[in-house]
Image 1 (cartoon, rainbow, N blue to C red):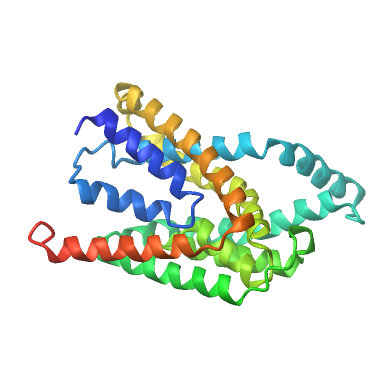
Image 2: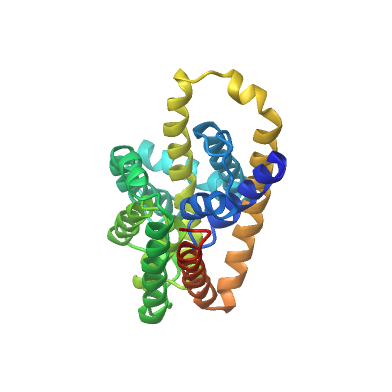
Length: 279
C-alpha cells in the first residue's frame, strides 16, 4: 500500500480514536499489524509525535473559547490567592488537579508499559477490559451531575484513572469518561471534562516524546515531510470531528456502541491470530 495512504489512515485513526473511547495507542499498534505494514517511518517516534500534535491542534481549535476564559481565570486566582465563587477559576483548578497524576506518573511509566504491552493479543485483552469498565460506569453512574458540580477530590480521581490509559487498549478518553460517569456526571459532562483535561496531557506527552527527537537525524522528518503533513492534517481534522460527534452523541445515547466495538475488535484480533495468517 502506498505510504501516503498509510499516513492518511494512521492520521485518521489517531484523530478518531484519541477522542472516541476505543484506544488510540491500541489502534496504532493493531492497524499496521492487521495490514502487514512494515515501513519504519510509519512506525517511528517522529511520525507518532506529529500525529499527537495533530490531535492537540484539534483540542485547541475546538475548545479555544474555554481556554481563553480558563487560563486568565486561573492566573487571576493565583494573583488574588482566591477562587471564590467564580466557576471559571474553580474549573481551571479542577483541570490542574486532574492533570497532576499524569504529570507525575506518565514520564516514569509510559515507555516501560508501552514496551511491555505491544502484542496484538495483549492489546485485544485490554480492549475487553476497557469495554467492561466503560459498560459498568454507564450502568452504575447516576448521570445527574453537571461538570460544574465536580469536586476537587473527584477531579483527582479522574486524573488517577487517566493514568490507566498508559496501557495500550484501555483508552484515555474511555477511562476518564468512565471515571466521570462513576462520579455521577452526565455523559456529555464526563466527555467534556475528559477532553478539556486532555489538552494539557496531550501537550505534555507530545513535548515529552518530542524531546527524544533531539538526538535523531532531522533529515528523516524532512525526507518524509509529505507523510508528516498528511498524518498531521488527517489527525487534526478527524480529531475535531470526533470531539464534535462525541459531545453531540452522548447528549442522547449511551456508550453501548463503543463497548460493542471494542469487544468486536478484540474478537477480530483473536480470529486473525488463530488463522494461518496470524500464526
